[in-house]
Image (cartoon, rainbow, N blue to C red; front, side, top):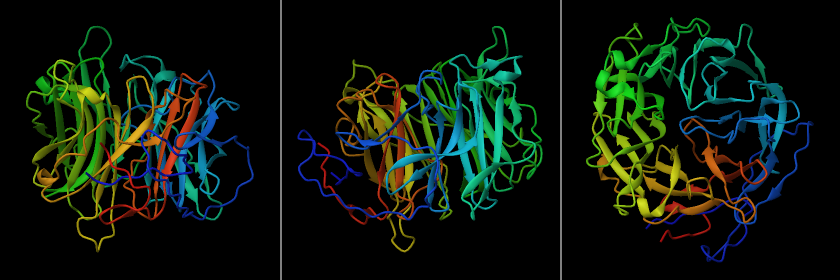
Length: 472
């Protein structure tokens, strides 16, 4: 069993904790004078942020494959709803005081919308795709409900973002439960989402891309992967899809992973970046899950900095009480040769849900120092956010499973805010220079944002630096 930690200015929990060692290693962060936000420590772990109010769509930190946070210029940033301005805005995390500070830069002003953020370091651009939030994904004639792309430029001198001329642009004619964005090595942007044609048409996995690399305003016509893989990409109304750029033994690729509750299966389709036709070159892999069925939870990442070609997804299965020892939360790992393996996080009797996955990259000189962090909600409907860690090994099939037990190390919890749920973080991989930030919400008690951090330099060889904790 691997040692784990709880971080931030947390207090002792007599149920789970034996020792509390608070180690403070603070990032330097700029001081900005703007709207003050009330903050207090949660009595279990983490930080209480502020109330997002009654106007915005419930649980604004959702949905499962989407990322509301990113790391840039030594700072963590996020997309949070400002209840006074009635719009989503870009916030900066003041690392010293653990307060989200409103930068005044607006994003989508539609209360019933959610977003996914991609920071492009090479081009100094922030991409945010935003969609009308609904459980009934479909093509729709109302342009107020179409998917949008916002693009921002960043000034390091002033530490501010500015919306680029000509944005936002429309990227599909759909309202959807989820919408995710990524960029391939040619500079082409991609989005993936579930949708359907109007009427009684089946739900399907849709993809769209920019017509030409480097022109972020010119988008093609969305197309369905069901036109290529009809048995696999025709899905249930509640299914979702996610998207990832990666490199394997065959080269640089874009990949789409989706759930299919009609056939209780999980699929991954990918294509090489060198193919100039977005609809061509797709190859399908059906992920072997044995007798395990699937639920609509996917959090997808790739370990790309060392060209390993490894892809990881935290998923939730359809395990039922009839088999309480069946895996409920899994990590699906795709090795650079295209082979898949599965690694159990917790079982049906544990009751965990809504996993998100982060890849923590170790020092390049320390072989085998990369790790998977998986964060979950402890119960359906929310309770607390917990996490476990699994070292990445080669081949991926040799990684084994996470430490057994319900939920894991407590990461965000409180005796008042007892329905904390829908954790989100960054699309990027993290490391000891960035630390880790996870944002969540409680839509039942106060409609509040909450978050916690793992400090800079906290992850070391052989485990985690402080607060020893054994998962039982």
